[in-house]
Image 1 (spheres, rainbow, N blue to C red):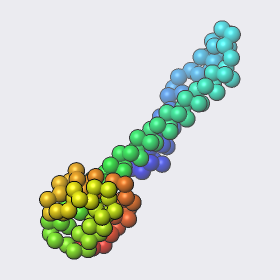
Image 2 (cartoon, helix red, strand yellow; image 1 turned 45 degrees about the horizontal axis):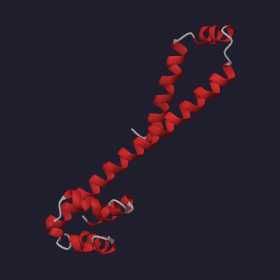
Image 3 (cartoon, one colour; image 1 turned 180 degrees about the horizontal axis):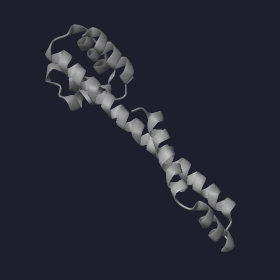
Length: 134
């Protein structure tokens, strides 16, 4: 399920909840009580936008973590199977990394160390390079 589908489902759920409740009655009661409905609606819209933004950020973070894990596993597999192209690519990343001395022995890297090396790189490019080399 992609981000747009999730956003649409969230919006549909919110609209459904509003439709199932008697919003007109609530508005009427608030208005009778002297509350400013425009101010309430403006505030509600602002909060909805903030929550939507936070949810989108969380979804993007989870997707990035999945891609990072996938790339790390592909690199680990390439190291174990001694596939030269991904190993050369990883060596290039290690040499660009500020901890290059720490990661000289690629065959001894664990998944967390591989993630540390590739986390600030373009994950889509890494995955494309790895998948093309297999």
